[in-house]
Image 1 (tube, one colour):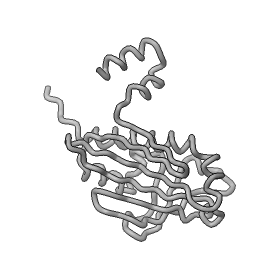
Image 2: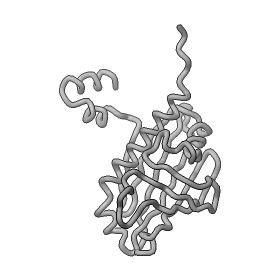
Image 3: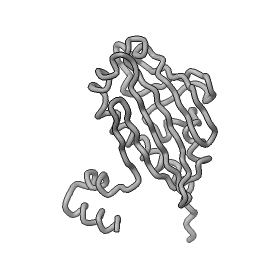
Length: 183
């Protein structure tokens, strides 16, 4: 049914717009100071976890690069092409405060924004589903006394970024899980 719907969309709309409506694997839940994007992946929790904590190869599926060690209590640096040339920021410092193998990775922004009253924390949770797939739950919460200002300035970009990130990770791990084609 999804392929029929997608085929009709291609004939009527732009391909990019239709993919959003045809996708059944990603959902968004919005709260006052939170945002949760959930994507269903056809891969093992172990494979997804390995990609999430492999900071050396993070840029293989993510627009960000991360330098530092994936361990509880570590502070890592996240770099983005979007930070280049910025007069006030060239990276974000993120402290890993929760880490459960094959399940959860959480970090909090400990950069200057946090000390100025606007920051956030983020968790990625992996939830095995009954059908053998895994739900990737990417949760972000704005923090600080000026969280509302940060939300006002970044919310639409954050929704798009979390969706894009989940879909990129899905594509990355599912490419490795795909069965070999016999010739």
